[in-house]
Image 1 (cartoon, one colour):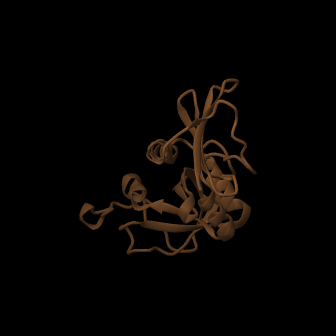
Image 2: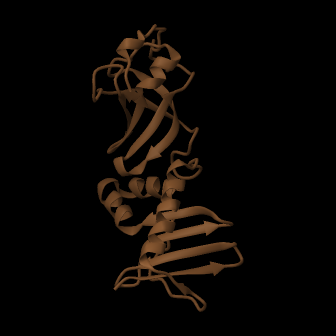
Image 3: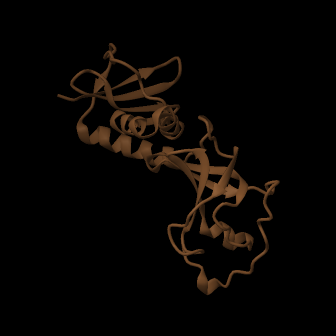
Length: 203
């Protein structure tokens, strides 16, 4: 039977919300520091990413959703029991906040630079975007088609190398959202200026 409670850590000004599984591990964990969500994690999702991508999958998840409690959780004195709907409400709000918060930790924080190679496109050029091989399979990069339109540069052929800036992480799909940086790769002539006809460009 799942148990849900919240408890206050005054030294860090943190409220910890726990949903414990039958064994006493944190199935879901929310941490609000001074009212701001810094953790909104699910144990089953983190385990699934670990199984798919090893340690790197866990690091991507924790970079976005924070580091949950490890091991068995003891219910502290003064803990306040909460109902399932109350916990769900707090968890959903915390998840939505973490999805759009800047990523400042982990191996690929926002603004960091990576080298990569343009790969195949899931759709015709200019429709959705293009994949990037960053050398950390199964984690891959993706550049939104809007970037090429806004910067008026040519669509890259697969195999072209470039430098990219990380602008977001989607851990559930093991994807880094990337934008090509202003620094051209030494072995590449890309990008070239290209005037995109607006009628051919769709998101």
